[in-house]
Length: 477
Image (cartoon, rainbow, N blue to C red; front, side, top):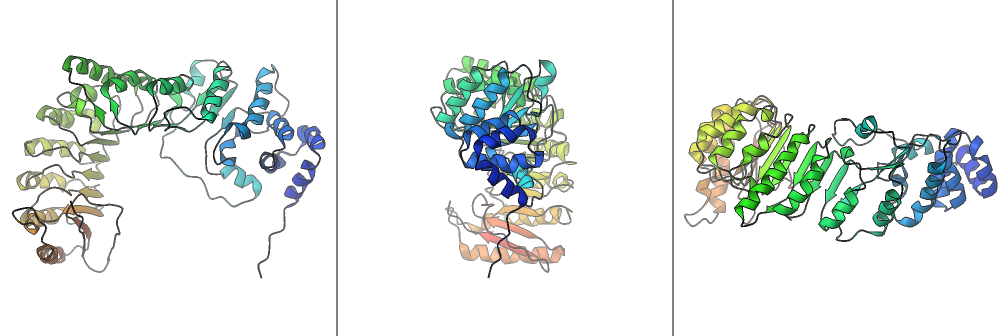
């Protein structure tokens, strides 16, 4: 028989107080601080509107994490809180108890409410962001009475009711409200609406930008000045950008875009998918980088010899932890360029992705010595390249004993295929056994993933500590 946990005295006191809303409102000024959070939760979920307003105006904490209490923030549940804030903002002298400075409409993980409700908490999730100048705007202009934090995921062509209501509310109070967000994600929305929303946001609060939709280069050029105002951005993700047929106009757009990187003094991670506009002019962007990058991803595009040369000479890649050039055709590149590039990052590199780069046996063999000096390397992916059994044996030999290498993603050997490109499963099984024997002879237990197409990293992973093991998967191209 299960035993129910009896309610705490605090919970009983709060429930009793809310039965008489007039008494609850009059008691707010003298309410013990520890009773505020559980009583606020009861009032919020029970729609005790007047009590809710009174509690907001006497909130004894700097931070009110309202987003944790609502699954989908609509106008209704917020209206009482915003009306109470209007009363606060209109007052020249704040109520004696009120310390409220931040209204948080994000889902931050219930940590605050769990702590005060008596539920166990064991820390909160981390975004991996470095706390740089979070309130930079506050040091450069008069302190705003209230900061409102939201999650901005612009995924509809038109503004939803909540965002429309909030934007209008902030617009009417721009002097006394700072609308902030740490992470901006654009999935699909008209440029006009994007500009409308961002015109209300303190852009220097944004630390991560994701553009997850296909834009024309001209659209990115329009967005670029706003990006330049996001001086605290640490992570930037750009999806494929379509270019026009007018080369002169295109070059103007490239200059407009790359010049904004001069203003991103905290950029650490740069991910660009299919940035075809950078072909032949990658140096323009690299010259504008202000700080060393932790991760660089330039994928599924064409680069020139000069692009790769400038990349290898860029001083701001010398501390890279992750380098992703998957889908960049390297077949015709001089191996020396790849060698110099890897030498630049050998001391710090932890992840290297060269999937579907058209790398030849000769190129891979040329970079094996410097690859073996990447002492921090943890993940290496070469899937999608046509490599012979001979070069794969050399690869295993050179990477044996690398202290941190744990995830290895390799293509099925070239000998597994017929002259017409058909995969022979029986031949692959034979080559698999040969590779296992090679690893056994090298005397270093390890696990590798073998794939006939770019490796599905979300697939099953099997490890054996006692002996080497080769995991292989077959995926139709």
